[in-house]
Length: 132
Image (tube, rainbow, N blue to C red):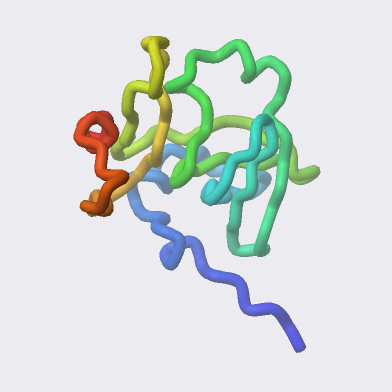
């Protein structure tokens, strides 16, 4: 039975992202939407289904905001290696918890966002404020 993979529009692809690709890139690369990150491994999905790739070592020197996060679009070459990150429509980020002043990327290219938290004994106003 053939697998049924989502189309790019079903994944959130639109004119904003399409216009960032040259004709050559459209013919030779594969756009994938990032849905999970685990250290330097990225899981994405495109019209061909699930793709997992490692971040190139050169990318590890980038600023945090220049690295892929959930919701980003990345162009992969014919061997499944990442070439570049497409420009974002939005970026949801917060200050990391603790004493550091590091930025933590939460999601990119988000149209609508709901923040939900429990109001039980573990409720933390400071945790909620980090998202605002």
